[in-house]
Image (cartoon, rainbow, N blue to C red; front, side, top):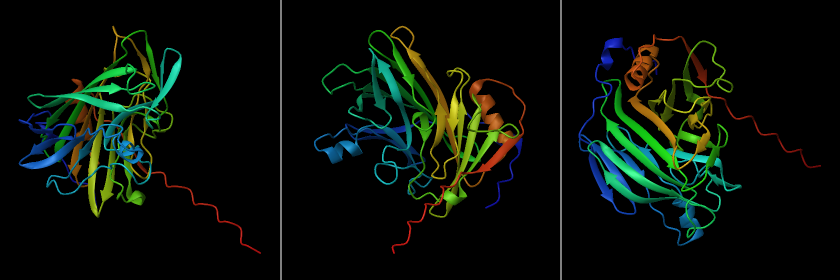
Length: 320
């Protein structure tokens, strides 16, 4: 599918909010409807009655759907890398009181939604990041706020997320690596990995080395249908942010790191814009970023890269 022909003037309403139709099912999910169709679903169940159920429910995440509400664009539990789920937030190395916790793979501890507060354009989730046990004080408490917009074409859905993480005392060192930390978008397990393509702002970008990109876009195909996800990185986010945006299975996002205290929480601010079709217009991406960040930067050159493909597995030696 060829890129959509787009003019700069098509994005005059990038930040137009709509009256979010929010339905909360306690201890299960929050549905977000647009034009009568569910286009996002925040998964927040926390059933730990068996090890298998805990594996399915140890972290909250946001599913995204196509405009019809029928096609799920993001991955849930199971399949390759079960901890990869929708739009998610986690860190593999969180150090508190000299102890390090993995709240990416959710080793011996979960992220637990304790409250949901609907807002005019979305909702706010209160989330406990567990420590050594479910009965111990959480190592971090989080407010994760979502606001939803109905952008102008080519995008059909906008998801803005603000997160505030803080410990109840002392400091928490928040760290990891680009593959196992940060705010990430994971497409469906049905993605056609050989077609996954990334677009970066700048000429000859070395994605494994570059820091603090303003935006990254991904073109991905699910069940024969192509979509584009644009991630916007707000200038208020921690500096020296790395990006993972090269995997064929499509998990991509920003990896910030830093230190949180009760007085100075760790704050993050991102936005995702979702479009049907193959969108590669740098002017559209840059205008979206400028509207989000309050800047007026010119359209950059871009680097387009087909996703890195997995290395062929070595053949076992023939038996004699």
